[in-house]
Image 1 (spheres, rainbow, N blue to C red):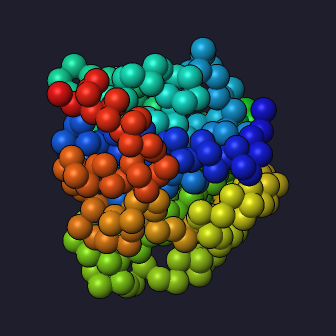
Image 2: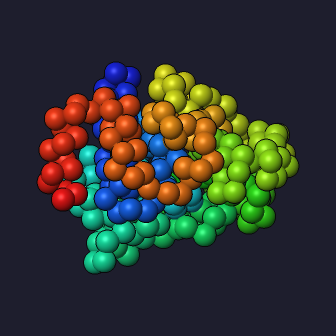
Image 3: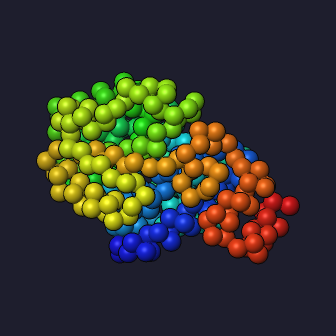
Length: 289
């Protein structure tokens, strides 16, 4: 069932809340890129665009999703938990010894995860392989790959883009979380050569779509367009986003690429996301004594 735009907004708020809770309790993680990608992930999983079944995570005809920017694991975990792949309580074991929720996604440990990622630039190649297998097996499933803009500096990404043009897989859709910040600084300061993104993908034979990655109506329209065109050629959706979206002190700030908030900052983040003081106190008393 497809959620409405208003429902997607509320689900995204809940995902952001759970993402920050998990990272806070872990005392480590990557909040900035998790929050920027949240609306993309929510539209994909709750907007009806990825065919998956939590009761049978690896059924042969399922759609595949590859989180190439594997450090955004907390957001994907929150989505998978709300989708029913595992209990929400498990989110609070993020990065803990024995937890199925690794710091970067692991197919071996977590139901609903298709590929173990974290070494940037490899995800599109993995997704391409999955899409080519669908073509060989004459199956109809779609393959989505969420990439960061920083990893477009990796040559392997472009090898995959060129190879897709040559072998013409069906149902391959790349999603670029273009928040313009990577580990060291703003992407434009580190290596502005990734731009123009659309022209480069088009030169590799891809259809491109550019949207506001926090506008659910635009995301829905982009996915609808991509579903039609990906039958003939691969599609790259460039989603322009804000790093740390939804948390005031994290937004558009490189420092929040990969660190957890302290208790004071955690409380501010929760209030930014609409959590009441009573709910914050209850959570802290239960999980952070």
